Length: 112
Image 1: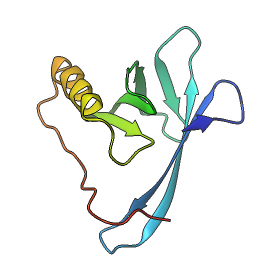
Image 2: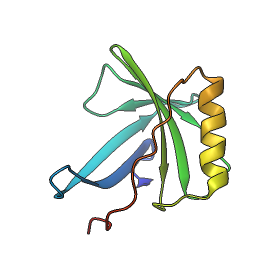
Image 3: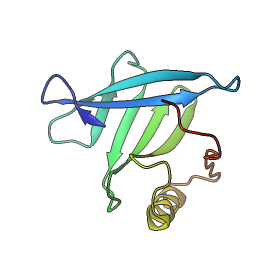
């Protein structure tokens, strides 16, 4: 997670392991909206992203809404965020009518 090339940008980077075991770098650029918690995702004009505050260090919570879907995301700099962060995220999403919770597996070695 880093500031983008402009003061109104937030850049998120990740390396995602595919089913085959290879690592694929990904990058998302969010454009901040002054006076709002709404973000625009570069390259995805149909997507609305809302930023939520979090007491979790090194973490960020997002709600993405697109055509026919809604999802809540917890990003953290650590692959093992503190349990209180996960609990806070689950509590927030349950209040926002989320019915399923998926925790991605962390058993494999990190991508380099």
